[in-house]
Image (cartoon, rainbow, N blue to C red; front, side, top):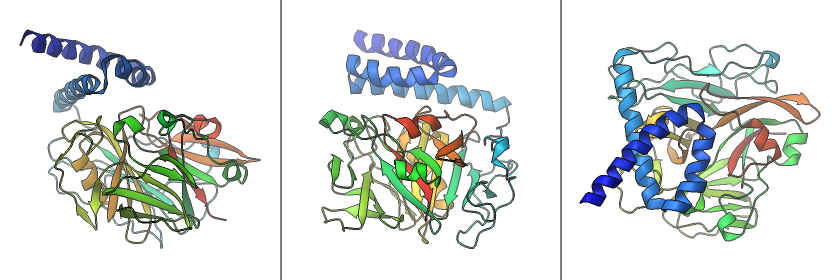
Length: 372
């Protein structure tokens, strides 16, 4: 019993220290958790420390937002050289009807209303749109940002990182947006992939290269030669020749338009670092009935509330992606010509990792490009 109290005390002290440290150096804190704590303490004890930290962080937020109104000014403004102003979105290819969530909070400015994300490649049309919603009726500060992408004009691919997820198997990726996409000046956006191999052993295949073997009974996002994507419930079926990549990251969040039951039947149902009860930054990807992609990211979320936001935004199938503050990223690129780009993060709170995706990043990611 004494050891339990000592460990609980260590967890609390570590959480307080981590909270302060994370505010000033989130990059170092994230790297320390993966590269120091896990090898030193093991995944189970690291998970306990992470859980205590995120619980502590959520309690701090509850206290702060008892007296403070949530801030809806969350999006990064496009760079001044990126030309186009933000406007109310309209699109023939995407349903951009306003989103209404059943909570009792006074609405924030712009909540649930889609706005165009400007792009130098699409100056006279809306191919990306953004908004935000608050899906948790008990947390008015839990804001989920959403990006909807017109996949009739855009394509999607995925790239393995220079180490994750296959590095533990000795199988390494390039970690960069393919040079053909970069040099064509058709890159539009990049967003984070899934968990590391040790946090669930979820499958990833790109071309003929198997970074982590696909597992049965999991949500599996397939990407095709024509730039489109589709979710399947993988049961060991042979993938077609037109499939260029596949990525898994746990069970479905949404399947056939229905938010799935969140019963944690085993330790790795949601990844060892992402249990149902842990409030943290989470991200996810969904597909609409028309094949358009929705990316979702937000703070103080459970898988359930992430799923609800994706469903309300129009996703009929969806799965969770990576979690925790430093690892969730959505970077927008605008062409400068000659294979050069300016770039900025979707959210003010996001790390701007745009350079790494062009020159080498250690984790897997998805990239969005203009179809030729």
